[in-house]
Length: 252
Length: 259
Ligand SMILES: Nc1ncnc2c1ncn2[C@@H]1O[C@H](COP(=O)(O)OP(=O)(O)OP(=O)(O)O)[C@@H](O)[C@H]1O
Ligand SMILES: [Mg+2]
Image (cartoon, rainbow over all chains, first blue to last red; front, side, top):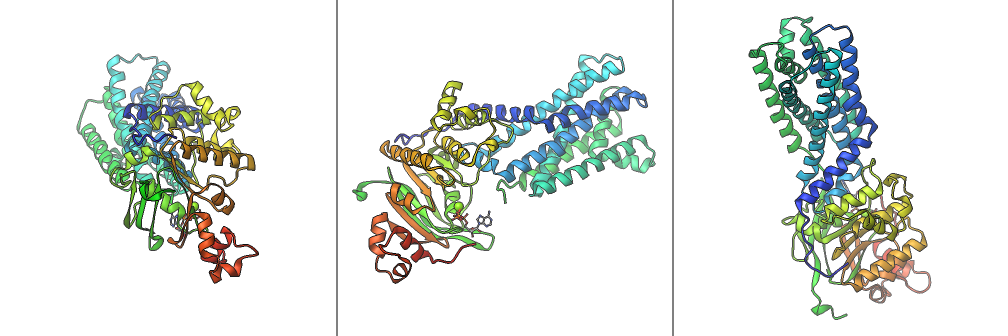
């Protein structure tokens, strides 16, 4: 301990670097994160693509979408809720770290992981379907994946913003996950009728699957795709708004 | 001690803090001088941790003010936090990280880019070199305390806030902590600690404040408090033989158990 009254403010660069390194390590060391992020989309891909009951772009898009959804709604939100409950955030917040940096680091690491998963799923998908995607396809898929990740992370953020208990967040996250996937699947197949299909195309999962299909040139860009884009942007604004506005850092 | 000319490094004035409708801190005020070791004593639920939370910038008071080396944790939270070394009563660390990784993270958050050797040295300093690859949760209670203390002092802060730092420590570690606190004072650092051990308060604190229900009950050097309250009937009633600091504490705060 020294008498120097000047305790210099840490450089923001070092702060962010330290946080990102820690958050990335947490993600890499967590088996749950690995399964939710990588294993699940690959399983979805392999299972759904065996029967070839759809076009590759749609199926690959669906696999990435489910990966994004589970990594945000189950992975991200439960980890944030658990760390908040355990007092991890309290310890971080007594250090001279801006709270936005704590969140930005977590979100940034999530987004980077999601993009890596999207690439892996595309590569595996192109092998299964023995098609080669162009660099342009990859780029478009990454852009849509970024959009999708933002939608689902906002949704996860809204969940941890509105609900305090980690156990409850876990339960709600799972229920939401199943609901969103069901509407996505049932809607896109059209077996529940046109009205439901229209409704589904406005849900986060439905909108995203439409966008994936569109960017892989399976369908020409049309009103469905514009709808999907607007829906996604709307979800991001609304859910991120809720998640940031009502987020509480304290454990109780 | 020449208190008059020594500047206060930490000042708490008429602090009021509520949780919902419950008032946890009720008009509390005290100040800590540069180089002073100050003890905050009080029964469970007296408002010690809550007071520290306001100084740490974790909790906003209803009214009153706090000044840390001239800065307010409400108006300049990051500047205040950079000056503070904090050991929380209940804190936890990311379960997936080893304590070496955690040490690196927190060093970084306080502006120190420590190489591996330096991190190991810091861990060795609190006897945790062998545990470097373990996560925090796999440490024993006392080891966890020592790790938290290491994190609190990683940037040599001018002010240390320690919330029950010796609970769960063995006598050796406790003595070691006292030594560290003494050394920090010699280097000009100030310490605010809470404790339930009157022995500890007497051994290390220059002055103590006894608080109850969020209000100040007594303030002074441990010896002074004993002298001042020796003849208080409430203190006499609980004393067994010579009046001790513990008798003063129980006399002033009552002998009922707190919830
Ligand atoms: N997060 C919280 N929400 C609601 N009430 C709280 C919260 N934290 C503390 N309290 C209440 O505020 C009062 C003061 O609590 P505080 O933790 O400051 O006591 P303390 O002096 O640190 O006690 P201990 O010696 O047990 O650590 C208590 O009555 C407690 O029940
Ligand atoms: Mg306490």
